[in-house]
Length: 425
Image (cartoon, rainbow, N blue to C red):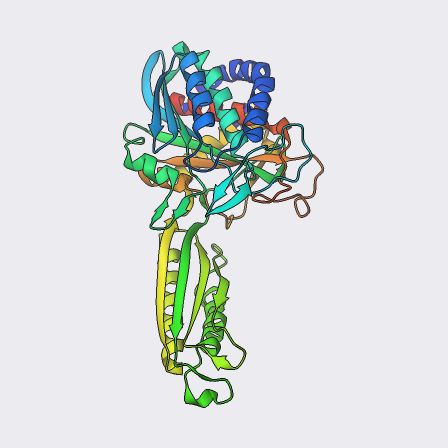
């Protein structure tokens, strides 16, 4: 049955699957050891100096061409195959988060640092430590068969996936790597993200829009200050902002076709006033916007502007609406997804490959996909039999990953390379 699921193009390289499986099993313990070391010594975005050095040294030991300090702390290694063919890129992100770990592990994080001027614990609370370790394993597996590769592989170890948000500076590691030319000679790119709500040994994917694009919302509503006992003598920006927040919810219930893709508009903070009997002059709000695809993003942005400015105008107030675009939506091209699905089925087994609903989290892998075809998957990291509703989620102090799924990550990413190369013969 499996042979019929492997496309004619990928079948030419599928003979390497057995060799990949054997090599992946052999280095599984090394991958786990690497991950535990990175987990114990996490580093924030654009500060991944120790991580980057370990990665660069490893790639050099495998005979690769290595470039360091790409997009500040990024590392790029190139493995030249023994035969001509496409350049296939694989990406792992390296940065950790300003989160103090609560897990009682022998390799729990020992690092602290400064974030936004505050001392904080640092933790790999999103699983990037596992991404780095898995890709280091893939590098070792493919280096061991480089003479059989029908093309070359570019290993991209990316900093600052979580973004750098500093006064006057907002940047993302993938975007900066693209600007520095990392994708120029690439034919296709593949990436994975460990996922705490999927059992280890399983893989999740989606064709088309997969993860949301994310934008920041900043709103200032200005009215006329007045005594709280005589509101008719002023223009109340607090009441106006309340009406605007409620109005924003009609975008999702009346403007967005949620049968196709969801969208989110969340006001996360609101501030106005300083005293109980004073109506303030202005109210400030900040929030987040999640959309899938450029068409939906344009619609939601337009409606946000229209609703807030018109509600403010109807109250006699003024509204200043600013939307800052951050990550575009992570979109798996249907044609590439169809071609690579047999590789996933071969790596994990058909029953272990899950077609997922859209995810409203975001990923800066989308910047790579803007340049060249890219396929992004979720690798299961939840203990078998776990409940996804109670399993600690990403970006929390109790975030935990079952390492049993790492070897599948090595296999899947390696399969992507040899199968894609086989299609391009």
